[in-house]
Amino acid sequence: MLITTIAFAGITVLLAVLHVRQRGSGRNAGMPCPRCKTMVAPDASVCPRCNAPMQAYDLVLAPIVADGPEPEASGPLHAVVRSDLCVGCATCVDACPEPGAIVMVSKLATVNLDLCKGHGSCKAACPVGAVVLTAGAAVQRLEVPFVDPHFQTNVRGLYVVGELGGRGLIKNAVNEGKLAVEHIARLLPPSQPRRDHDIHAFDVVVVGAGPAGLSAGLEALKSGLHYLVVEQGAISDTINKYPRKKLLFAEPVRMPLYGDLWVADGSKEELLAVWKTVIAKTGLIVNTGHRVERVERDGEMFRVATADREVRARTVVLAMGRRGTPRRLGVPGEDSEKVLYDIIEMEAFAEQSVLVVGGGDSAVESALGLANQKGTTVSLSYRGTEFSRVKERNQAKLEAAVEQKRVQLLLGTEVREVRPQSVILEKADALYELPNDVVIVRIGGEAPYPFLQRMGVRIVRKEIALEPATHEAAAVS
Image 1 (cartoon, rainbow, N blue to C red):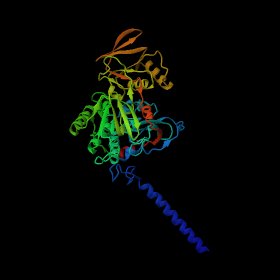
Image 2 (image 1 turned 90 degrees about the vertical axis):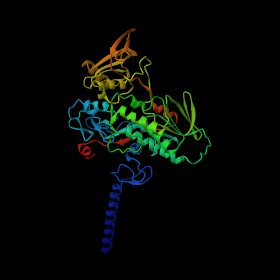
Image 3 (image 1 turned 120 degrees about the horizontal axis):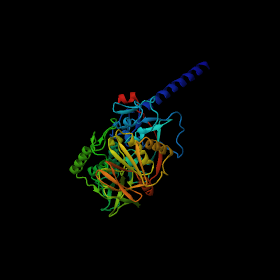
Image 4 (image 1 turned 135 degrees about the vertical axis):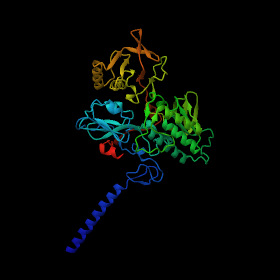
């Protein structure tokens, strides 16, 4: 009996040890590649078999959470910088009113929790959404289109890539565009006849010619697919609207570039010049000035309609950005380079006279962020006599900024003309001229998500764990 008991105890201990080792081995083994299922080491940036960049799947694999309130806050509000999104531009450092609360360490913005007061200026200034304010768990909830590891939505044949999918970095957009079209090319081998026998149908229509759309188009051309790329504005319209000489960063350094579109540190003019050279040399055809108004399912196909044309497509890649179609002022001079519809980097407007137009939270937050920049003169024009759609917190901050003469409030005014060195405003039927360098228009527009939902795309809430940039982590990278 004693021998049996000892033997049983020994076997139990042995099994427990093996179980612990097995669990430890599993943790150290990493994860299977979402695309080809090859095991990838936890510290590897790309799949050893298919070369897919693992960071492209962070949001894809993040868990879907139920609708409801954000997790309960526990502790003082503070900033968290996502090391996987930080591009090292230091805009947050300049915007922070607390010296030393955010510093640059090895190209990463790093928060000193002892000095951070949770003002939120860093979050408002960050051009890529890498800064999050939290008082509890280091997680972020996002509303995004549902996509699988091939960036295909729940609507079969319809793909979403780039900023529209929730990740706005240029390098990430390039990677996603290529990954999506590689999957399409596997489903529609160029050498094989199509089951529908429609010789006029496109294998893929790419909507948008930003970094994601251009990357998708280049991969379609390279794969021999019958493709069409359409863009409502100009090539890389969003980047083209960045401030002149704006410096773009190819970071984060840990994100490998998988797509064929060149990305490196440099000015927007340098980046666009290289992209235009790539387009010219490859022969990629981009149809600009064509806004897609409707995408509808038609049996196994899609109908894609612009204002002057309707085509049939077997697959559609939506790479049209997250901002949707901005509402325009409809005044002379609005097409000038000085008129922007979004703020990419607050520090680019230092020492300039900026007019922000709008009466919502986005306009107020833009004005407040710009007021933090060195030497920037900020005016806020709103046609109403009071703000009715602004959060109390923003209203209080705006009132303080106006009282401190950091923002000039121009209620009851409307822009009537944009001139090279000024704008013409109307107030109470009288016109007057305001000296001005830049106009930021924040008056809303058609959001892209209703457009997706009309096509049947499911919008979900995802919770992504933040990887905060710490001094130790930054030094390693």
